[in-house]
Image: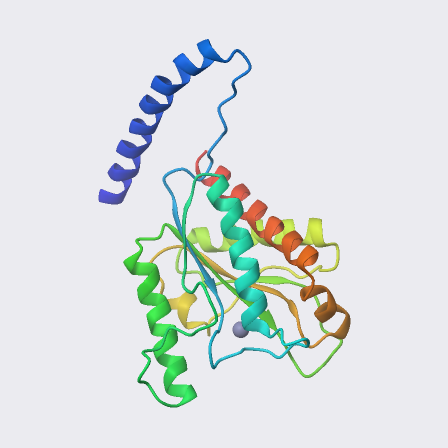
Length: 236
Ligand SMILES: [Zn+2]
């Protein structure tokens, strides 16, 4: 309830501020149009999977899962910030979130994932996305896919919105959003969120695409569009 009142008060403040700014600007500039800010007042955490000693799935050209998730997260951040969101990335560069003295990859990995969860809480996020890439031994699998854990009703809606946009824009995936019960972050986060698997590094053709900036931009734009649709529907 407290959060609800905070949002209402904040929105009211925004409307008043908008009216105050809007009126004089429209007088000065007849062609002035207010830029809509659909994510105004929202804090979003983007979590680029892996990092540092944990490279995630292997790619080529020194580009592993950890590099591509970071690039795409930064691109999504750009779109969200343009739309008024406050965005935090769990990492800005090639590192994990374990403490520097922790030894051993598996110990680092469990500390890392706990710290990612703590990060979402600490930033008081309204929404989060964890971003990964898939790899399985069978090279025939391909296509991006969004996953959710049903701890909040919003989670499924968010995953559906993102997946709908990925299907429509990427034109190389017909995967449906799927419930997953084994992802620590999705299970334990106290705010709505989803996991986006951007594609399969184990598929040679898709790997070549995933390593291209133009393809990464298209993925990021699609994920953003999905988040936007979700937010617009939620605010109705
Ligand atoms: Zn991963």
